[in-house]
Image (cartoon, rainbow, N blue to C red; front, side, top):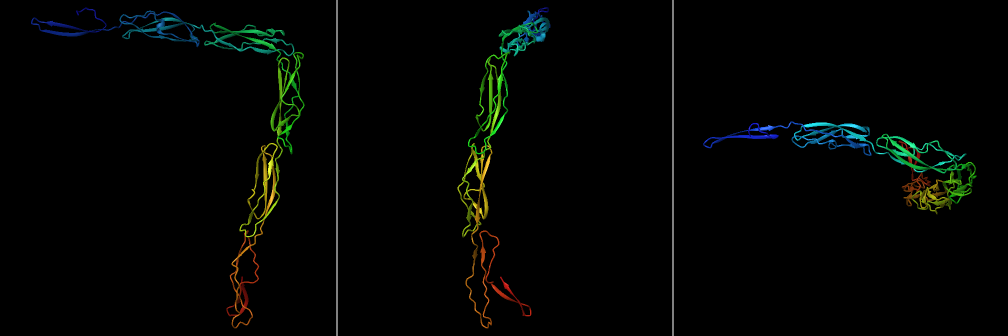
Length: 441
């Protein structure tokens, strides 16, 4: 390409070739690089955007682009700032659009984004309600009912108004009125909801003389797990402004009723002709203080250790007693059981009956073990024969033996009584003179 030629963006290699008459040729080359430094043309447009129900809105660069272009390549929409909006941005907002070409040249433009809040508040009125008529005039002054609405709005609620203003006097003959509540948000959007207010005699009868809580005992010897209770019944009055009809009673129990052990709630309910009611309650507590009854408690028992018994004890048997209780026996326990071994002497056996409410009773008897087992003598010597011997001047002779031993089933000290001692040995001094007799036992 000749000097002065038009080259495209990018790098182009330009080659020169020279040839002589003999056909020989030579070349040289160089590059021509065209750099794109021309920024794109950014063109913006103003737009209007509505906030969503949550009070937020988002825009994209394409929404404000209005034909941005570039001399060399399609443009890339880089960003729009700001791109997110909230209730705080309601109205006109300036945004900046940035575009770039293929080689990174950029340009910007600005536009106006107008944010609108078009979402009405979300409202829900409480359901219909009933107000009591005055207990004297049976009229009513309509109260402020704006609290009877649940309202939400992303940008905020500005006000709640009531269609029949608070303070309006509702006559005695008027049974109901419709109420409409209007909720307005901070940007002027409104929503309404309605409900009905009814007016009735809602003054309940007044009960007087409700009994206090009562406690009674089952009592000694009671065979039932219950007891009767009595009280003076309450009274009641009703008016608006004069009695409107007979009152009726509902009673869970009557005086003189029988109540089980434990606590029972007694309830009196009185209703007037308009269906209003009042209740009074008290408790009747029956305490089980009746002890169990033990039957057939054994009489006192005496047993002997017996001949040949090597132990200082003996077994004793009996028929165990039985127990009954007005509310139920939980356990019948004993310090000893029939067939147990008892030591010599007197032992008290006690049976204890426990009912399900902790009351107890006992019965006792004694087991006396008499030690009538004689001691046992062992190794009693056989008969002994001795001679007086030659030269004996006395008509007698000493005799020796091994003394017996004795054991007893109950131990302790054994006392011996001996008709004779084993032998008697004269005791002499060194000079051979007899000074006394010493007997070995």
